[in-house]
Length: 316
Image 1 (tube, rainbow, N blue to C red):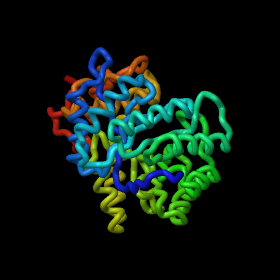
Image 2: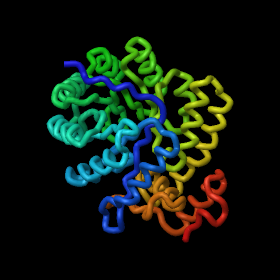
Image 3: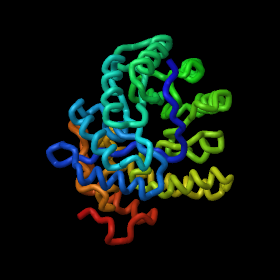
Image 4: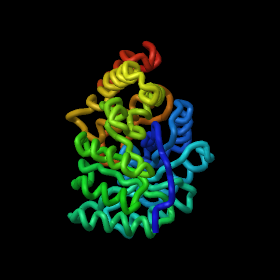
């Protein structure tokens, strides 16, 4: 059966999941994250993605996150939910949980841990499409699942309507170009980039939108970039992109004391804490949170990029 329809465009941030000091969902902070993003003009939300630390949350925690997101959004924007798990049957269960909570679509990676072939990956998407009555968005993120959705696989997923769109976080710009060409051949199949530093280039290629973790910190700049690209003002799009490149330096502050993932999401969380959006910058265990001089450096980058005045973002 064909996947239900969903046409997505614009800026769809993968939301951070703020945590309390004991590692539970910080509900008031999560509500502020959602309102911060909606107030920034975004076009949809993606909860339980990589930026959400999805694999660190068990089924009970995921349900709490989805339920609160759906309740807070209240139908103002479409909500995508990451149904991210190593095996097909577990993905289907997560997808059905998202459906019951009121999500508008699910985001699905290739299976991981077990090493599957491209043909088996296509079967995986077919089983999920048939097992969950929600639109499926394919998520190409080989850095996490250790397998690339090859060009022929994306084409099969699009043409067999196993998914309604693609979020490409592969870092393979040539592959992304072919995916955009697939959208041209199949207009109902949207293509969005997760590349935060080259989003203006992706829009020039013909991307339908951007799924940037950095938008948790500065959603307005990504919306400016998208709007400028849509009207063909590439100078304005470039200016917004270059501002975001400077801001993106927050993701390197924690290295090498932390892992790459903890440095990235930890940089987002630290900036959001300094800006008053969330209460703690805690990362899910065993990831390390930013601290001390790292927090001070993030505060300095916020001031340097104009997001905070001196005194409004401090290490205190």
